Image (cartoon, rainbow, N blue to C red; front, side, top):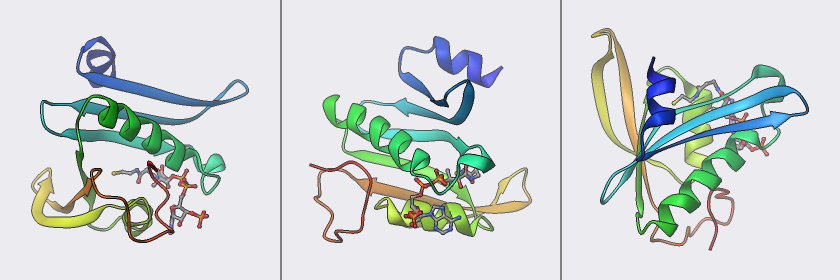
Length: 129
Ligand SMILES: CC(C)(COP(=O)(O)OP(=O)(O)OC[C@H]1O[C@@H](n2cnc3c(N)ncnc32)[C@H](O)[C@@H]1OP(=O)(O)O)[C@@H](O)C(=O)NCCC(=O)NCCS
């Protein structure tokens, strides 16, 4: 199972956000030598738009910076407008269009953030310096 393998992997952080006894959100980031990849990020519907996703991503970005990694990449479904707006707000920019990325059918956007640059837009709410 992908999540179990991620928990065991030395180069992966698996992060859970809890609200009392509920799991509110979940994120997996894989760290390479020069860059990191966000494998998964999801917030339970009832906890969305409350800053959970932002805090999960910011925590994982801080780990990357501490490890000397300043580039984060991810893929998001081309039709997932909400997630794209979320990532844009976190300072991510679209770098590629990937037709057929999901099961050869659905397109993805590749997005990335350069953590070595202080965001020029004060509304960016990912990792701060
Ligand atoms: C994308 C997702 C992780 C965002 O998590 P979240 O906890 O709701 O996000 P936050 O509350 O931290 O949002 C921070 C900011 O991002 C933006 N944002 C988040 N979701 C948004 C949406 N659906 N539409 C527009 N902007 C959005 C807003 O600017 C928001 O700030 P605001 O609420 O003060 O306006 C969540 O919607 C989710 O789990 N979606 C389903 C799974 C998914 O698509 N995962 C990503 C796959 S790559």
